[in-house]
Image 1: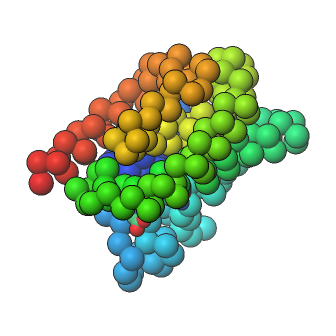
Image 2 (image 1 turned 90 degrees about the horizontal axis):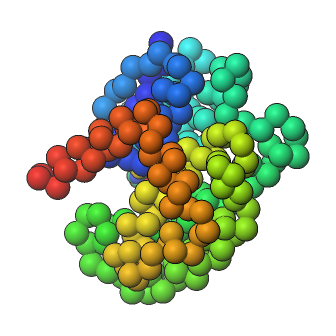
Length: 214
Ligand SMILES: N[C@@H](CCC(=O)N[C@@H](CS)C(=O)NCC(=O)O)C(=O)O
């Protein structure tokens, strides 16, 4: 059985877990906090969560994991079938990952873990995020899903990226990202209503509350 390593506190873990639930995988969850130390680096060479263990070995990096899981259960498709459309979906995920998710995460310490605000980092992050949000706005259809009529892995990836990025932008700059993306709010509501996402979000919130209580 596939093992999913990580913690419900992570939005990347949430992406993978929801994706597995939606595709009907049978899997076991193994709690682990991210750690840049052996022997975890054997599983996840950057020490990050999530990672998965399958018969063939370990895999980390969420987009790689989602791609592999997609190939395991093609009969529940979460990917565009046409080659060009598939590349467009990959483009949307890449823009979301690099210029919104990874950039905003540079402020995680300040926003989520009680660290000081590093104004130089905040000043550096914001212009990239502004461009990333504008690109996301250009590339998304919201009809009703990001790529069109069918849900794809881009929806799951972006949903959990924005869940965190919106909190970071609000606290750091008072910036409401949703105001800058036409259709984002309705799409977020649509996604939140999916039973697997609603279930995951309860677990995510509970994990955050537990962390805040120390
Ligand atoms: N690029 C990674 C990002 C995953 C990630 O940033 N995970 C966070 C938890 S939400 C983590 O492990 N952070 C610990 C660290 O960066 O050392 C992926 O796509 O899976």
